[in-house]
Image (cartoon, rainbow, N blue to C red; front, side):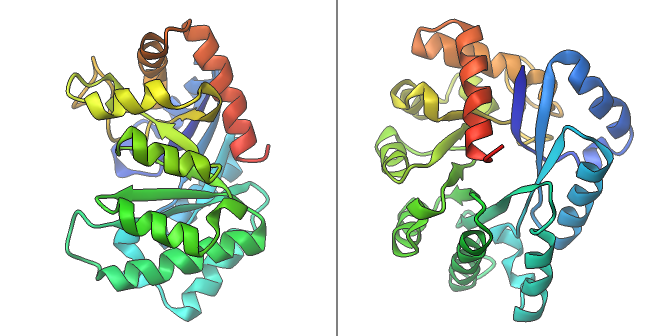
Length: 254
């Protein structure tokens, strides 16, 4: 059984075949999926998906790239969304310094507020951190994220940085990038990260693994990631698949 811990099936890339693809997943051994919101619009679409499909759950939050849309008034709306019975996390939230906007102080403000929303609701967090490791770690420490728990989504830093997140009790999300030939840094991190702290994710429709790199990603491609992780860690693919499934259940308190 496979658990896709992070997907975006609300994305327009799935508009033509979303229902057919989602109905196919259980037949192919993908028994659970967490669809992840990034804006108010995608959170609404995520709620619709998790109400339509028994095996689809949701993480609801505002991505750092959309934090300039947040206000004190609509933050209350987000909080109400996160009270949905099938919402298993607040996310994806965090910091993204790849682009110049939104302003970094805006990103930091709403990262902190969403961390504390998760604390209030007793939910884990899905953290997006791109080119922002130092500030991500500082805020997590200041806000005592170790008491909240969650996952570092689409991990892309060094093994030393991974250890800092592990020491906080966080899981590490590993996706299609681990299969890329030039992903030396990630492969070194995966080799070091204990198997019981790895969860599998697609971030679909993005970051499809080899041999589908450049195509639309989906949960059906997770076996390629499992095989690569097993190769890196000297394990059998069945060991990785089983451990990752149990890890994701623990992550999302299911």
